[in-house]
Length: 114
Length: 118
Image (cartoon, rainbow over all chains, first blue to last red; front, side, top):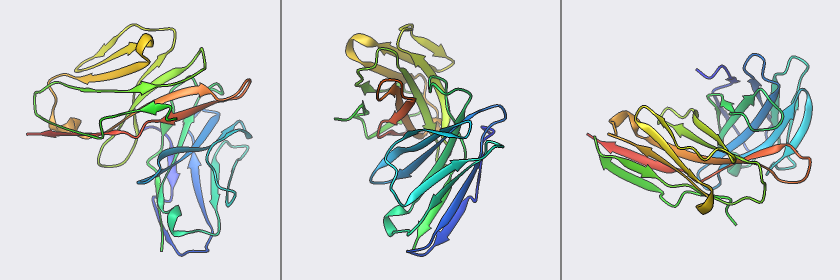
């Protein structure tokens, strides 16, 4: 158990809908990262928050957004969903901003868009 | 250009064989970090090792060992006396600054599916 929690574990929805994925980092970790894992794209970095502020963006679509709240939990919002958004979404946390420390991953949320 | 290359898509070995998973990386950052993660069939990503660019010492942890060679930009992972429970996808990853002053980004390779047969 990495100490990172993600809810829900599974999510099935229809095209055009909007969903919110939630992540609670390990106690004491200020950085939260979001990743998307799909068969065709592999594991891709989406976005990084540190202590409530966005610090880096990767291959995140404009239909996707995220935020980190004062209690450090984070939410990833996916809107106007398409079939291609079906994937496993991971949240990870680490203690630092610099990215040199290991990231601990949550169990993931499997999103299926029908 | 791919920043982290894991050329072996799938490897199959028989239990007790040794196996080496290759990882080649590319970066312009002078200070960077390399990682290996394991993803068993259950799906979670499990951290295995972290190495910074200034530490080229090889590391051994039980049946696992890692060989970091800056000269060839490689960070290979060897499992000695493999076991069925080692069957998983193994990812190599690179943490680097993508621009001056920016936070680091973790870039994963495409992974190597290791199957250990009984």
